[in-house]
Image (tube, rainbow, N blue to C red; front, top):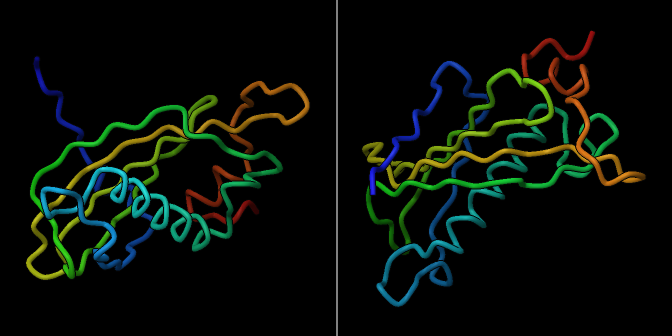
Length: 146
């Protein structure tokens, strides 16, 4: 199977979040488990959106759902490693908000994993995806919606 590399968009970084591998994040191989990595990514994503004045449950009046997630691992992390999660959000197009995250060891910057996910904003009345509101796009672009 051919492995497609996730290219992290450096120019679109909106936030850097320090996190630590907890003992409960360890799997039977004695390194950071996939489920724990997804939880760390979620924490960093929430913090990144908050730094932009946004929340996952109210993005321009709509809640978001994760439509897909791709993760590529580069190295192992273990308890009690200090990590840095960089979140990059390119300008949205259409109905998906693509979020890239890169997890690195805080000391030395060795990459642990790179992830890409697509968030869809959903109209609660219809359950259908909506176009990304201009206020959300403006917050991501750093223009504050004005």
